[in-house]
Structure formats: structure tokens, C-alpha cells
Amino acid sequence: MKVTFFSTKPYDREFFRRLNEVYSFDFVFYETHLGPHIVNAVEESDAICAFVNDKLTAEVLGVLANRGVKYIAMRCAGFNNVDLDAARKYGLRICRVPAYSPEAVAEHALAMILTLNRKTHKAYNRVREQNFSLNGLMGFNLHGKTIGIVGTGNIGRAFARIMGGFGCERLAYDLYEDEALSTAGVQYVPLAELFSRADIISLHCPLTEDTKHLINAASLKLLKPGVMLINTSRGQLIDTAAVLEGLRSKHVGYLGIDVYEQEEKLFFRDLSQTILNDDAIQLLMSFPNVLVTGHQAFFTAEAMEEIASTTLMNLSRLSQGLEPENPAALLV
Ligand code: NAD
Image 1: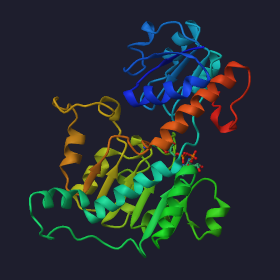
Image 2: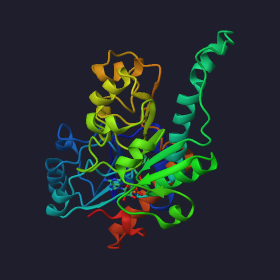
Image 3: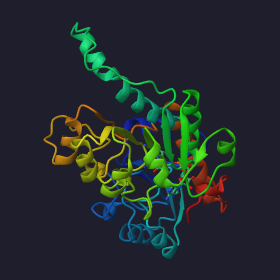
Image 4: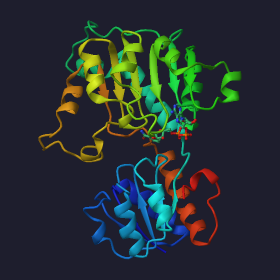
């Protein structure tokens, strides 16, 4: 089986090569994104392995199917960038990694909360300059605060468990209630109630038609003044222009984003020698109460190992006419 990878970095190649010892697939690694601009140059392959910012549009899938591609393996959980109807039309089988170390993402959400709250990033720089003043570093206790969790799937559940350990009151909103979480003290409430009661809101739902711009000018008005918003899910859950307005008016007290609406042109690259052609991110990064990380929430050794092993197992099973072990891994 020949597998062509897109959007790869040295760390992807390292994990996939190591775990391929069992399968001996042929790998071709591209660093570039997959999209209409490159798809005509793709060599014949049995499978494509793609990532969060690759564009698997109907046009791209059509060209790939014409070139003999049978399987698309997403090495991520989200699949908002894949046209599933087109995949069905072209007879492609598409799989993903539905759950890989959800704790990796949940722990990163916590890291963002603690950094924004206790300002350890500022303290680190200050102390290096022998400035031991505490002015401007005051935070708040997480104990007793109300956390709103939107989406209680694999990651939301892990995040809820963590925040329980901090002694927070936990509110949740999901299309489906998780009984085990309710039993453990998480209170499911309507979304508007979660928005109006939470001191910290963390987004863990997927990007769908319904969740696009879930945080917008109207919903921002429902949030508590000074709220902390955390998004480790997908950039388009937040209307960037609206949240910038919320930050300017101080209604949004803190913003932590690991994902960003226009991230495809920025994230996963070193642009330190470039002038960024994106005013919104420049503005966001200039606020002292905003923390941006470049889609790194998944990035732990444990998660990378699980992503590579599940992706290769999915491909191996599909090529033998079997379905992935986890039914949620098969998208089409
Ligand atoms: P999951 O499928 O296990 O859980 C998603 C939950 O969201 C489900 O319980 C679902 O019912 C719920 N949901 C769906 N629509 C909703 C809506 N309209 N309102 C509220 N809840 C809704 O997914 P997961 O593994 O927990 O991952 C969640 C998201 O995190 C993924 O979709 C992906 O976009 C993102 N993610 C980000 C990173 C990163 O590195 N930043 C890594 C992995 C996943």
C-alpha cells in the first residue's frame, strides 16, 4: 500500500515511520497542505493521509479518486474539512482517529486557563530581568468558580474531570447528556444558562453548521462580564471580529485560543521572518489578556503515538476489506 501524506512535519514522519515497522507500507511525505492547488501533482497512491487544515473538497476528492486513491486517513479527530457527500459519490472510504489521548487537549485547555489567570508567562519574563514586583500579576482562585463546558465528548469529559479536581462548579451543554458525568456532579443546563452563569467557558464541540460562530456578537452579550473564553476545538466556533469587540469593551476578560478562524495560512509554520498578512491575529496577540497557541493542544508524545498507530491500523483494516476497530473511526 502506498500512502501519500500531506502537511507533515519532522515529528509526524518520525512517529509514522516507527509505527510502520509492523505494516511496511510505502510512504511519500509532503510538507505542503492538500488542496486544489496541489492535487493534480499527487502521484498515484492507494491512500492519502491528511490533517486538520488540508482541504478535502469535492474537487480534490474527485481528482484523487481518478488517480486511483481508495482510502483517505485523517490523522485527527475533526473532519469539518472533508466533503463527506463527495467522498460517497466517488466511492472513497474515509477514516479518522476519533479519540486519541483526549487528556492531551483537556490538559492544554487547563494550561491556557492557568496561564491567563496566574500570568506565569509574564512572571517568567519579569523574573529573568530581575523584576520581582507582583504588580499586575494578581489572579483568582479556580476553586469555587463556575466552569461552562460546551461539548462533553471525549475531550469535554476529560476536561470536566480535571476541573472537578479544582473544586469548580461544572455546567455542561451537549446535544446528548453523559450520565456518568451527571452522576459525578456535572450539571447539564441549556446553552443560554451556561453562557450567563459561567466564569470560564471552554469549547469542546466539533465545528458543524450549527456550531459555526457559536460565540458571536449576540451570544457574547449573554456572557458574564469579565468571562474567560477558551477554545481548543476549531477556530470557526468563534467569530473573531465579535470577540475582538468583546475584548475592546472589556466584556471578555480573557481569551485563550489554540485554534483560529484563519489558521491555515499561519499555524504549523515558522513565520518569524515574515510580515503577517492577518490584522486580526496581530490585534489579538497584542492584548495582554489573550493567549494564542498554534494548534498544539493535541501535541503530546502519547497522542502522537496513538494518532500514528490508529491511522495505520485503520488503513490496514480498510485495505483488507475490514472496518476500523472503533466504528466512530469510519466516516464514509
Ligand atoms: P467528540 O466527538 O468525542 O465530542 C464532541 C461532543 O460535542 C459530542 O459529545 C457531541 O454530542 C457534542 N456536540 C456536537 N454538536 C454540538 C452542539 N451543537 N452543541 C454542543 N455540543 C455538541 O469529540 P472530541 O474528541 O471531544 O473533540 C472535540 C473537538 O476538539 C473536535 O471536533 C476537534 O475539532 C477538536 N480537537 C482539537 C484538537 C487540538 O489540538 N486543538 C485536538 C483534537 C480535537
